Image (cartoon, rainbow, N blue to C red; front, side):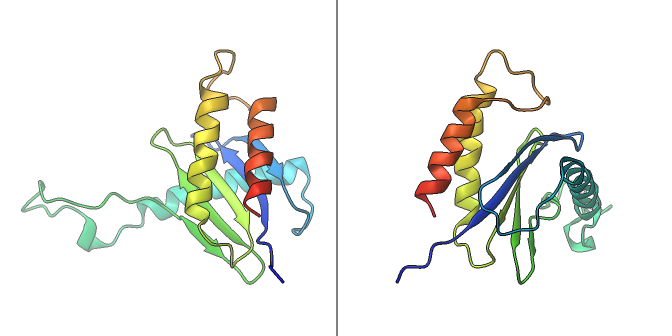
Length: 152
């Protein structure tokens, strides 16, 4: 018998830490209120910023050779527990996509990249969408639902 993988929820956070989109796909996690989602988004944004500044000395440019290549700090990317996995994808503009899945869910980075493509196609290319504001797009909702349903 084939066991289906579960994608629980998606949150999109703007570069200021505000929640601009949240969607539950499966009811396996504890139900959160709208206020809880706002707190979660702001808290994750702060933790992400702190972890981004935590950089080992080996990756910092030296004072003797400031032109030495270094790997840019990215912040927290994955948080795992025995009940769920939280994967973060941050765009170059600072928008964060948080995907909550089962811990065993394979290819979460691929799923997040596809969700980002849907975001670009249905949200960012919409001439009526204001950047950094809450997302209200039926096409984006339908695209997400179709993609997540196919990849279960």
